[in-house]
Amino acid sequence: MLGGVCLAKGFIESDYYEKKEIDSCDKVERLAPIIFLIMITIIYPILFMVNSPESILPFFSDLFSGMFSFSDIFMNILIVAWVGIIIFIISIPIHEVFHAIFFAPFQKRGFKSIKIGRNHTAFYCETKEPIKVKHYIIGLMAPTVLLGIVPVIIAIAIGNIYVLFVGWIMTTLGAWDFMILLFVMKYNRNTWLLVVPTEEEIYYYQPKV
Image 1 (cartoon, rainbow, N blue to C red):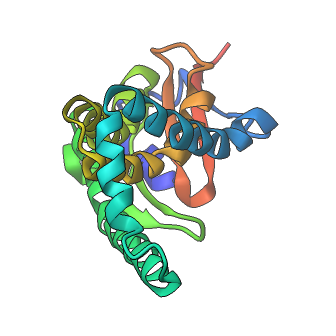
Image 2: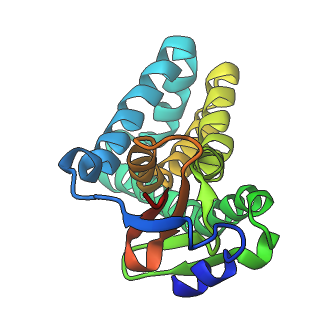
């Protein structure tokens, strides 16, 4: 984190700004990932069924083919679950790379100021230099929107439940990002932030009085 502040020297002069830790103890924000996951799990299928009810029946017909054989039903469900897990695992690095792509233009040193890693709770993409709230929001939500929400919209439009499934998985990866979004949206869009996932902290810079 200190290295990131050093990289920002000249970007934000320490003589004029002081670092303040953002309070991240609000229970609403802490519950945000769970609420987010519940919402998309309910809303996505409802929107899909309203627009393409005829696409649901063939899927479940295939899934539960051999209705009188419990083993067949169990195997079909198991296959769907394993496919979902594989897609989820593959999607994690792609999600973080998309963060990096959209953060880099707002960093003085571009991709050199971007770090992708993993702490004890999750993978992360970190900016080593402070970044404005409005720019951070772009990089923060880009993977969820482009890889998750857009495919879901396409799936609903064309009535493809498999694309919906992939879009849902991609959207679930944005649950933690949604929580951070609620934190940072409390601040002016031109406020400078330094987000430190390794410490699970977010700092903002405010002018010294």
